[in-house]
Image (cartoon, rainbow, N blue to C red; front, top):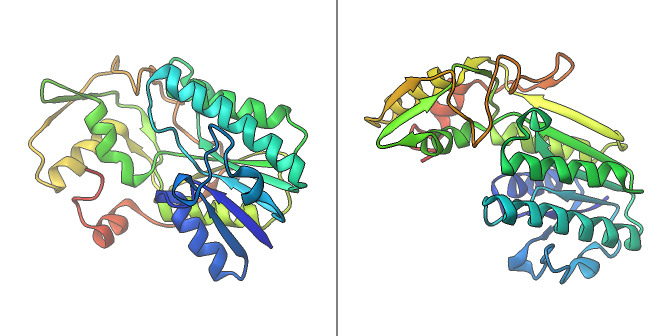
Amino acid sequence: MQIVVIGGTGLIGAKVVRRLTGHGHTAIVASPSSGVNTLTGDGLAAALDGADVVVDVSNAPSFADQAVLEFFRTSTANILAAAAAAGVGHLVALSVVGAQRLAESGYFRAKIVQEELIGAGELAYSIVQATQFFEFVGAIADAATVDGTVRLAPAPFQPIAAADVAAAVGVTAASVPVLGTVEVAGPQRFRLDELVRQHLAGRGDPRLVVTDPQARYFGAPLDEHTLIPRPDALFARTRFEDWQAVTGTTVGR
């Protein structure tokens, strides 16, 4: 099977490419470095020529509200049009568990638009919605830091290793289209503030983590259900402490 991976040089994309190749598929990397620009459409037609499946794990270069919305709206429309013209049979896109509940955040509004465009299109598709990556726990702390203090809500969440996300995307790409969404999550449930506190302490970061129920997550309020996967989600095996032991505590800075 010939599978084009848009964003194939990124954190998830590179892992997806390795997994697909290891399972005997022809995985083609499509990214700006390979001459493919989904925002302008340059290189898309050539990259998708002969493809059976296209996987979109790309991300916006800027997370500013208007820029990220423009990226996902335009790039998704370009991918859908080019894939249809090339006769691609299956589009797989990576999104976020709870995106629809995070609509006060500009980034998640953009992901909602991406999902809506894919769902309204004529191409058979599967949307893999993942919970927060272990690798981004440090970035969550950074985004919530003001004057050296990290303020986070005590909201439950179930983060996942990037390698497990890539595995779910790879399996989905090699399977028949779901024509809907599949959720993937890690095996453990934590409180957001507590896990960030643990992670920062483990890498010797002196920042104080304050529990604040009103603290926003990338601009969106959280409650007990916002970040939690559905009961029918796929649950990965990698535990947070096992990931830490393999990667080291400095990962996620």
